[in-house]
Length: 386
Ligand SMILES: Cc1ncc(COP(=O)(O)O)c(C=O)c1O
Ligand SMILES: N[C@@H](CCCC[NH3+])C(=O)O
Image (cartoon, rainbow, N blue to C red; front, top):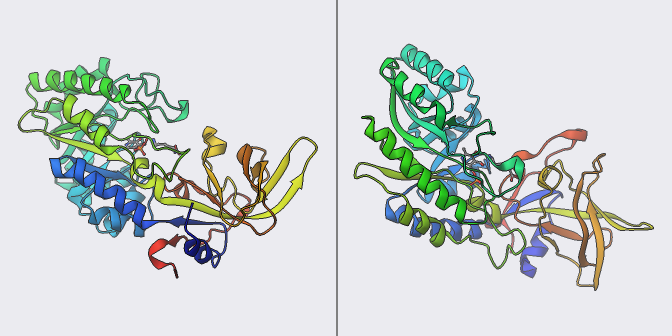
């Protein structure tokens, strides 16, 4: 819950809008610095989670690099001050145009996901006259224990190169004269709350690392991806994820050779807790079976509940009345436009301000204009009149 001076400042802006508490972001980044960067680990922020320039500048200043999945994100990273040698470009379907943008800027690394992509990258790099650095995204077939739509490291997923194809891919490298294989890359899924999948990932990564090095390749980059989950139920008590345990697990379990460094691509765990979607109650409706609180934000602003049945905490900022049970719903013409079902919150009335919490990652970036919805500007804590 926000303090009263913040709540009254938040009243001034046109809802719905995203509010970013930059102090929460800075505190989060302090922990990333303490438990990862100071130990020599490289942490790339996944722009797919949040690509607001203001947010990216704070993240860049803390010493993180950028993990991009489109030409647009590569360009946004560069425009936000990331140096090309801090930019990794991943993605299962990079277009020729997007690859060319990466080559033009001579970015740090392309994370490649198929043999065909390697051929295309090799050809385009040849035309550009520069060698492209490549990390192979390998599919470790590890169960991430998360929502099925956001698991990525299983054989049935479209991502990465399966172990059974690895020899064929490695055998190609002598012919790929414009590529330099510098590393291996993994990413098993997102919003992973247990630590066992990451332990399993470490043993798979160790085995594959040794296997490829034994074949005579020198890998300098071991990239274990992102996926660390956040606490959606208690964003105040857990505003910063337990990075000590997360990075400690990798420090203990990943076996690096002397010439190797460990890389991460974190999105949600960095940006998730600093953002809220601020919305106003438009109407309340007492149904036969349900009470509805109809708010002015919808799945167009935050699609996670509709897409993954995600439950974001709802804080009513302007009511201290007794609790009442509501379905909190948006104005979009879809029944799935529901933020929470049967949630107990202080009784609300038209005009009350509500914060839908933990919306800093995969919130604003996934916004759509469906129903011709207008996008209001985001608000940053540093600019509040408090
Ligand atoms: C390849 C890759 N790297 C990094 C991320 C960032 O993941 P997260 O936000 O869960 O840390 C994702 C998203 O799941 C991804 O697909
Ligand atoms: N968009 C997803 C995460 C996908 C991660 C990208 N591979 C979410 O909101 O939880």
